[in-house]
Image 1 (spheres, rainbow, N blue to C red):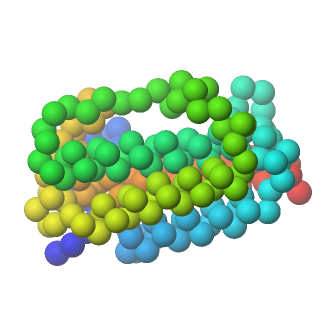
Image 2: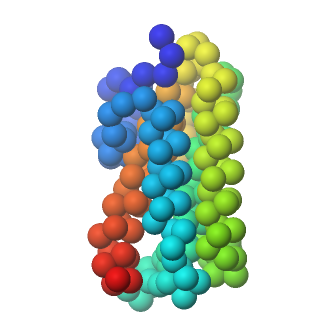
Length: 175
């Protein structure tokens, strides 16, 4: 059977937005393609452009890339715990507190991009290792039910959301 798109009932409504944003197709290939898409978006940026914020109080492009890496690790950890049958409720996280603490502005854009590549690569290896039984395991994260099968699609949808924000709100001002 392998990794297939989750069905309604495998996840709480709070995950529906990211699941809906995940494109159709082989999720593992799409996850890898997002790495290349982000690389293309970020590889030509100067450090000053990486520090760009489209509005006061919004994350910089560097902050956003760090957020994608942090989120990727958290999502993969959730998938690991749920996929291994651990029914312990898993906590949420405060993305803004993470962004402040991460200090992405002190890192180069190239380092942040390499970090995302590593985080996504580790997720892909985990996802490739899970069995059909593991994908069907049910767990709770951030007070919401989901199966392990949901996580790769959440990763896809989450990154797709932020890539769209980059294209719509950041890149037009940098041209």
